[in-house]
Image 1 (cartoon, rainbow, N blue to C red):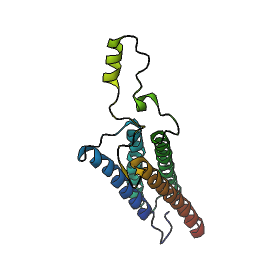
Image 2: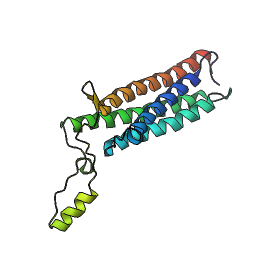
Image 3: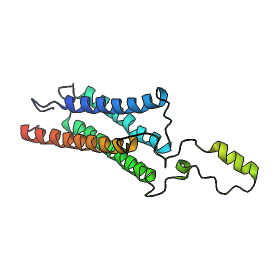
Image 4: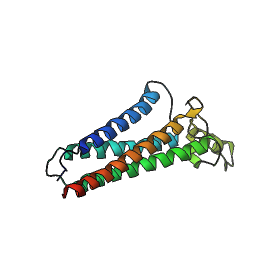
Length: 175
């Protein structure tokens, strides 16, 4: 049972709105702004889609008066895990952009291994145009991946704190 006076709906609503806004911004920058994403940019979108789905489920379940607190806390913890994963991908992307480490082969557009000009031409055609190791957009010297790392980490902490608070309130109320 949801503890009296505690609203996990707020937690799930904030997470849903934030994830939708961040994913919407990424999609708008691509489809309206013409900023094509690299492979790592695309990877950073998947956890937000997961968060939107889980937060939507949590928001719906939080409206049920007899809903299990364990289930709601578990959903919040899963959201925290998805967002922490996204933050890790974003930090990795920043490292690739800053040339601290190398990205995956699909990120850098490597064309090694061609034995003929025809092989090289096929590889070049199959190579993504957008490279992960080049900053496509930045504000105040911070790339989109950098901003995403901060946002995803902050939201992960918020979701984890929410999961903990749901459990704590349930124990305090004896449910």
